[in-house]
Image (cartoon, rainbow, N blue to C red; front, side, top):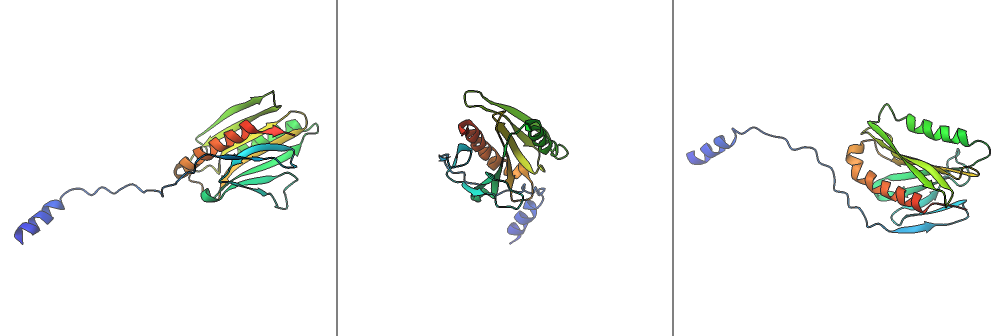
Length: 184
């Protein structure tokens, strides 16, 4: 009994180190894509683990949609506009949506989308920061008739540090979407 008590008291002299907060394990599905090729003025490939939902909000316009990722509580909101001498306005609006994130962003990096053989030109923005509302935004245009903008959102309080694996995973889907994007 005295031996047991001695061991217990000796074991209690070590400093307690709390374990860091953990997050749930996220199982990411295999990459596989399917074509979105309808009567819309554009087509692309999107992941089979996502679904296309037409945007039915009162403010939506024709050919707007959401690519939903139900397993990740996320979506890519897609808006489309016809260009009629108003391309500079659409470009400025896209830039303004990105600039709104500067107070919460740690960095904003961009990457050029340049596919002249398909008439696809644009930018993709990667917004880094634990409290940024969106981690990725993009736009593409043919500079004459079409303009499309997209933004990745999650239906959770922004904490991009814990969402990081999912964000990177969906960003690769966005790059695939833009690589396969075509105007009609």
